[in-house]
Image (cartoon, rainbow, N blue to C red; front, side, top):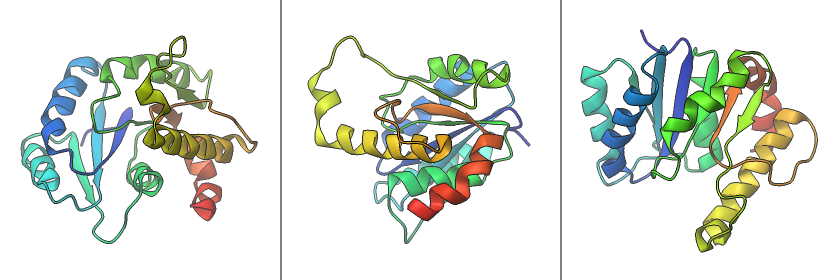
Length: 181
Protein backbone atom coordinates (compact mmCIF):
# COMPACT_ATOMS: atom_id res chain seq x y z
CA UNK A 1 0.00 0.00 0.00
CA UNK A 2 1.30 3.41 -0.96
CA UNK A 3 1.90 6.46 1.18
CA UNK A 4 4.64 5.79 3.68
CA UNK A 5 6.60 8.96 2.85
CA UNK A 6 4.03 11.59 1.87
CA UNK A 7 0.28 12.02 2.07
CA UNK A 8 -1.16 14.86 0.01
CA UNK A 9 -4.50 15.77 1.60
CA UNK A 10 -6.84 17.72 -0.63
CA UNK A 11 -10.19 18.97 0.64
CA UNK A 12 -12.53 19.18 -2.36
CA UNK A 13 -16.03 20.36 -3.08
CA UNK A 14 -17.23 20.43 -6.67
CA UNK A 15 -13.76 19.85 -8.10
CA UNK A 16 -14.51 16.92 -10.46
CA UNK A 17 -12.71 18.66 -13.32
CA UNK A 18 -9.46 19.01 -11.38
CA UNK A 19 -9.02 15.52 -9.96
CA UNK A 20 -7.33 13.88 -12.97
CA UNK A 21 -4.97 16.83 -13.47
CA UNK A 22 -3.93 16.81 -9.81
CA UNK A 23 -3.27 13.07 -9.84
CA UNK A 24 -1.20 13.39 -13.02
CA UNK A 25 0.85 16.23 -11.55
CA UNK A 26 1.46 14.27 -8.36
CA UNK A 27 2.69 11.27 -10.36
CA UNK A 28 5.05 13.54 -12.28
CA UNK A 29 6.48 15.53 -9.36
CA UNK A 30 6.54 12.81 -6.68
CA UNK A 31 7.89 9.94 -8.76
CA UNK A 32 10.80 9.38 -6.37
CA UNK A 33 8.62 9.12 -3.27
CA UNK A 34 6.23 6.62 -1.72
CA UNK A 35 3.13 8.84 -1.68
CA UNK A 36 -0.63 8.84 -1.58
CA UNK A 37 -3.31 11.44 -2.21
CA UNK A 38 -6.37 11.67 0.01
CA UNK A 39 -9.26 13.62 -1.47
CA UNK A 40 -11.68 14.70 1.27
CA UNK A 41 -15.01 15.50 -0.32
CA UNK A 42 -17.93 17.21 1.44
CA UNK A 43 -20.53 15.31 -0.65
CA UNK A 44 -20.12 17.25 -3.89
CA UNK A 45 -23.06 17.16 -6.25
CA UNK A 46 -20.92 17.42 -9.41
CA UNK A 47 -19.57 13.85 -9.39
CA UNK A 48 -16.27 14.58 -7.64
CA UNK A 49 -16.52 11.44 -5.43
CA UNK A 50 -17.20 9.28 -8.50
CA UNK A 51 -14.18 10.70 -10.33
CA UNK A 52 -11.94 10.04 -7.32
CA UNK A 53 -13.32 6.47 -6.99
CA UNK A 54 -12.68 5.89 -10.72
CA UNK A 55 -9.00 6.78 -10.28
CA UNK A 56 -8.72 4.89 -6.98
CA UNK A 57 -9.78 1.64 -8.68
CA UNK A 58 -6.64 1.65 -10.83
CA UNK A 59 -4.21 3.60 -8.65
CA UNK A 60 -3.52 2.47 -5.09
CA UNK A 61 -2.14 5.93 -4.33
CA UNK A 62 -5.58 7.53 -4.63
CA UNK A 63 -8.05 7.49 -1.74
CA UNK A 64 -11.38 9.15 -1.00
CA UNK A 65 -12.77 10.30 2.33
CA UNK A 66 -16.43 11.18 1.76
CA UNK A 67 -18.05 13.36 4.40
CA UNK A 68 -21.81 13.25 3.96
CA UNK A 69 -23.03 15.36 6.88
CA UNK A 70 -20.04 17.60 7.46
CA UNK A 71 -18.82 20.76 5.80
CA UNK A 72 -15.78 22.94 6.14
CA UNK A 73 -12.25 23.31 4.91
CA UNK A 74 -10.47 23.09 8.26
CA UNK A 75 -12.34 20.01 9.44
CA UNK A 76 -11.97 18.36 6.01
CA UNK A 77 -8.21 18.90 6.13
CA UNK A 78 -8.02 17.52 9.64
CA UNK A 79 -10.14 14.48 8.72
CA UNK A 80 -7.89 13.64 5.80
CA UNK A 81 -4.73 14.14 7.82
CA UNK A 82 -6.05 11.74 10.47
CA UNK A 83 -6.48 8.92 7.92
CA UNK A 84 -2.89 8.67 6.80
CA UNK A 85 0.13 6.68 7.91
CA UNK A 86 2.62 8.92 6.10
CA UNK A 87 5.57 10.54 7.81
CA UNK A 88 4.91 13.87 6.10
CA UNK A 89 1.52 15.41 5.31
CA UNK A 90 0.91 18.07 2.68
CA UNK A 91 -2.32 20.03 2.62
CA UNK A 92 -3.33 21.76 -0.60
CA UNK A 93 -6.45 23.04 -2.29
CA UNK A 94 -8.21 21.07 -5.00
CA UNK A 95 -8.98 24.00 -7.28
CA UNK A 96 -5.60 24.05 -9.02
CA UNK A 97 -4.26 27.18 -7.35
CA UNK A 98 -1.47 25.26 -5.62
CA UNK A 99 1.16 23.76 -7.91
CA UNK A 100 2.20 20.21 -6.93
CA UNK A 101 5.69 20.83 -8.34
CA UNK A 102 6.54 22.65 -5.10
CA UNK A 103 5.76 19.67 -2.84
CA UNK A 104 9.37 18.38 -2.84
CA UNK A 105 10.50 21.84 -1.68
CA UNK A 106 7.93 21.80 1.13
CA UNK A 107 8.80 18.36 2.42
CA UNK A 108 12.59 18.75 2.20
CA UNK A 109 13.09 20.59 5.52
CA UNK A 110 10.74 18.15 7.24
CA UNK A 111 12.54 15.10 5.84
CA UNK A 112 15.87 16.59 6.98
CA UNK A 113 14.31 17.23 10.43
CA UNK A 114 14.96 20.96 10.11
CA UNK A 115 11.31 21.88 10.56
CA UNK A 116 7.98 20.47 11.70
CA UNK A 117 5.88 22.65 9.42
CA UNK A 118 6.73 24.39 6.13
CA UNK A 119 4.44 26.85 4.38
CA UNK A 120 4.23 27.81 0.74
CA UNK A 121 3.56 31.44 -0.01
CA UNK A 122 3.22 32.89 -3.48
CA UNK A 123 3.37 36.40 -4.74
CA UNK A 124 4.51 38.02 -1.53
CA UNK A 125 6.19 40.71 -3.60
CA UNK A 126 2.95 41.49 -5.42
CA UNK A 127 -0.62 41.35 -4.20
CA UNK A 128 -3.35 40.78 -6.71
CA UNK A 129 -7.13 40.96 -6.39
CA UNK A 130 -7.42 37.23 -5.79
CA UNK A 131 -5.13 37.45 -2.79
CA UNK A 132 -7.38 40.01 -1.17
CA UNK A 133 -10.85 38.62 -1.81
CA UNK A 134 -13.15 37.38 0.94
CA UNK A 135 -12.45 33.68 0.31
CA UNK A 136 -8.70 34.27 0.55
CA UNK A 137 -9.07 36.20 3.80
CA UNK A 138 -11.19 33.37 5.21
CA UNK A 139 -8.71 30.70 4.13
CA UNK A 140 -5.86 32.78 5.52
CA UNK A 141 -7.59 33.07 8.88
CA UNK A 142 -8.03 29.27 9.00
CA UNK A 143 -4.37 28.79 8.12
CA UNK A 144 -3.30 31.29 10.79
CA UNK A 145 -5.45 29.55 13.36
CA UNK A 146 -4.07 26.10 12.44
CA UNK A 147 -0.48 27.37 12.56
CA UNK A 148 -1.16 28.96 15.95
CA UNK A 149 -2.53 25.67 17.26
CA UNK A 150 0.51 23.75 16.04
CA UNK A 151 3.03 26.34 17.23
CA UNK A 152 1.20 27.06 20.51
CA UNK A 153 1.36 30.81 19.96
CA UNK A 154 -0.52 33.43 17.95
CA UNK A 155 0.65 33.99 14.39
CA UNK A 156 -0.30 36.46 11.71
CA UNK A 157 -0.46 35.32 8.12
CA UNK A 158 2.50 32.93 8.14
CA UNK A 159 1.19 30.60 5.47
CA UNK A 160 -1.22 29.85 2.72
CA UNK A 161 -3.53 26.86 2.50
CA UNK A 162 -0.58 24.97 0.98
CA UNK A 163 1.76 23.56 3.60
CA UNK A 164 3.56 20.45 4.81
CA UNK A 165 3.74 19.19 8.35
CA UNK A 166 5.46 16.23 9.93
CA UNK A 167 2.94 13.59 10.94
CA UNK A 168 4.54 13.51 14.38
CA UNK A 169 3.92 17.25 14.91
CA UNK A 170 0.37 16.97 13.58
CA UNK A 171 -0.45 14.02 15.82
CA UNK A 172 1.01 15.83 18.84
CA UNK A 173 -1.17 18.87 18.13
CA UNK A 174 -4.39 17.53 16.67
CA UNK A 175 -6.32 17.30 19.93
CA UNK A 176 -5.68 20.96 20.71
CA UNK A 177 -6.57 21.84 17.14
CA UNK A 178 -9.85 19.89 17.21
CA UNK A 179 -10.97 21.57 20.43
CA UNK A 180 -10.93 24.85 18.52
CA UNK A 181 -12.75 23.64 15.38
